[in-house]
Image 1: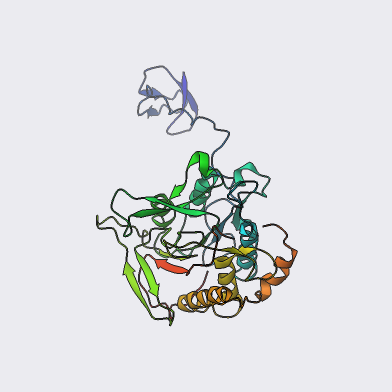
Image 2: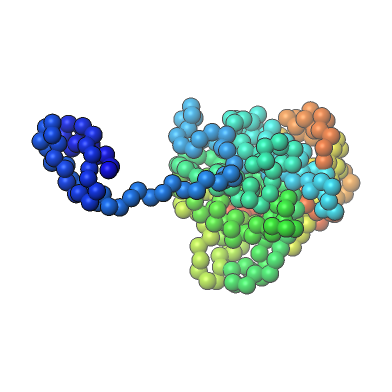
Length: 356
């Protein structure tokens, strides 16, 4: 027997097996049942592991009239391995500090994935990073501002579908990449870029080797040392669309696809950081973050000055934080790097205001 509510008086009625209608003994109304023979779908199987528990539920903004602000920050040191990096945890902490204090991101809207986290869902494994990416964009609405920051190793692998100009896919290296594999730029594009709707924006800051086109965005801003630039078309010859669903997606990355990114203490002169993350924060803190072009130029100048042994002083907001950090920015050795800017649409980098 199954129970159905009377269509008129809502009295629960016991429907005999196979019956499609039943008459209510109280009000005499006839209630039709679509198909009582079809059982409801079984509940999904319970998994001990699904997505990381979100800091707040997706949906309308809580108290933010112009949309939600939400961020995922990933910092991987690969500690106790031959791949160990010293600055990535510092990068993650400094980026969180910048988003909260400079750009007013609610602290509980930032999902941190580092090896220091005690929650197993927040360890930067391949599965957890994938789930964090999904959490970042799920329910995205016009007016939302999203940030994805990654500091860790990056790599490349041969591309076989012809959608890369240089013949290689770029990859992120999760903590467990040696056993679980890397996250390829095609997947990053599908998970982070494509879902962004018109009126929303996503900024990615990727501090890793070979990170120039890590989001597989259609256009790369090729800039020379004098600041002159042109947009390179990186749309695949297959005609596949690698942009968003109408929203704005812009990525700063640590270096070109054929370069490495530095894990260094020569920039902050306090502790190890990723050169790209530090130079990005420094540009914002020194008032050079008004446009995308000014940020990119400032980042490159900061790294070039470090190459020349000039170093640099820490930005005002992060100086005190860096002096307190004793943990080990980015994936690589050496300083042969030029930060890059990619986007889903071309724009004038010197007139478009930067905002998160």
